[in-house]
Length: 373
Image 1 (cartoon, helix red, strand yellow):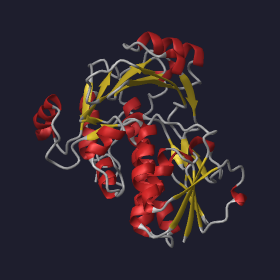
Image 2: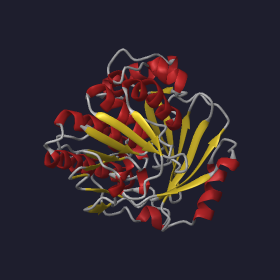
Image 3: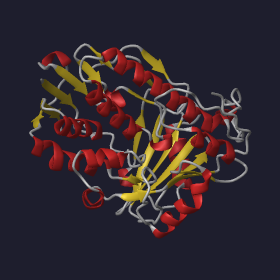
């Protein structure tokens, strides 16, 4: 089967690398140096290591080629008047001391799914390209595609990110308000083996440590703050000296398509859907889609689409709970979340945040927790 992957970013090379290891398909990646990639997906979830192993790579490859840093938890600051709180990569509260010991000593956990990574998204894509995809026979074409009709292939996989070459149908707008970000690195190297988020006036700021730099960004709603004001607040709030020559803006239409797979076209990654960067689920969603494609094969499009929708609904509810549970109500941005107060996990089969994650959220905000089966 002939497969054409359009897009040379993280999603494109994750897709190409995995398919080249798991199928005998004839795969071509079409990419253009004239089209920049988003390239800010530095924080990941624990299942990434499974993906790396399935591609034939190791943790050392991530350290050497993607300036990776181990990630043990997420620390949330100023979301609540009760102070900061942590979402550890644990399965229950009895594992907290063990998790913190591993983090303090920067040890590789002996238990599965207890750590993730911060990675340079550009370098991670290049690692998958050079060490996995191309050695496994994936062909590369450097050209720009303006119309999907220009592609003759049994399966076309759109990994063009926010550009959405194929303009997916049946789009569901997100209930989350954040749709923009001002992003800027710092050359300062910090020792933080965890992702940190800090609530600001109209959204939140991330801090992600890599081996050679620190990634920083302010994720916000452009309906509540201008880009100029967001830039000013970001610069004043970031504790690190920013490399302002590399500052850039991102914007997106939050939501997802209910039919990422239509005919011989499949949207994977940001082109299929995206809410916002909170809880580091974007790269995981790409991994989920690629693995599901291999697991289901090419004859179960309806099942594929149904599982995708179930998963995206769950992610949206979990992310929204971070805002509705927060006690911050100091302006119109935060007051808009008054309508939901109780934290209850959803019961979908394909969720990625389990009951423990909801308890972390509830405990962090000092709210009652109720689990309904």
